[in-house]
Length: 316
Image 1 (cartoon, helix red, strand yellow):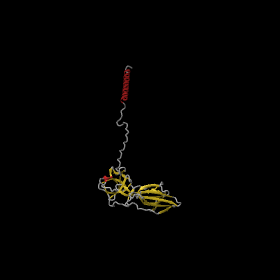
Image 2 (cartoon, one colour; image 1 turned 60 degrees about the vertical axis):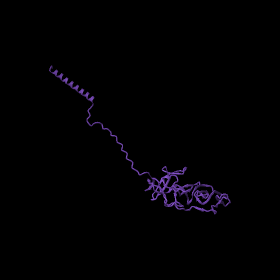
Image 3 (cartoon, one colour; image 1 turned 60 degrees about the horizontal axis):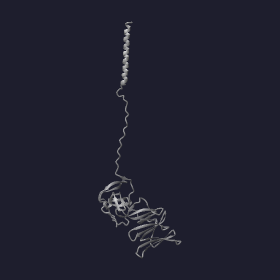
Image 4 (tube, helix red, strand yellow; image 1 turned 90 degrees about the horizontal axis):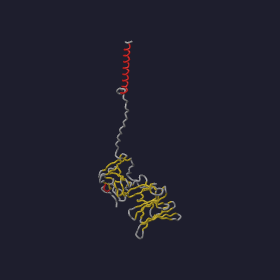
């Protein structure tokens, strides 16, 4: 027993020491945390990168959709929808007889143009224009009623006005400068004198509206015509400085700068904001204008037109 007891004590001490080592090691492991094998860190989620914006494709200089070009030759005068009326002759339409007379004042010789209407029942009416000489007249049947187009000239001066009169009452429905150029069914073409980079004869199409007023049709442009043209065919404007324009090529208008010395002629205009032209080498284009009517001035890109061209053929 004496021998056994020391051996048991030694064994118990060894067990206790071993157990304490396990406890210390366990505490140590908790404090330091578990060892993590290399490469076992959680994978980081990679944010997808935004694709870089693609550069906008290069485009041609400012262009406009294709438009129908100015006809090279304005249409010829035709009269399929009107009856010409002469002075001092009687014309009967729908049981009403019309007569146009021109008289002169005894005092100072002023012209007086008078349109008379007489129905079969003896009813008469008349419209009188003092200081106006007779130029031309047409009786026209329109979808909105019969009209008489009466053109006069102011006191023998080259200032023509066309009056649109209700053929039933002779009431004046509308008036505009110019003369009747043609009547083709319902389309009335008026010949004007247009002042745009010069003075030119030009035609514009109209229809007679429901109130018997004239309404532009089509593109509303004034087309320069050679009818009674007093500027030679070989006359061209000459640019005095570089001119920013848009030239018509391959179905589009594209920006271009015409150098000083370029020769061109006006072919059409809306009278307010745009000029169509043709160069001597037969290219076509447009450029914008600003009309300052209070000062009788036309500006091209802010520059007076007189500075853009060597000479502008205005009449008068």
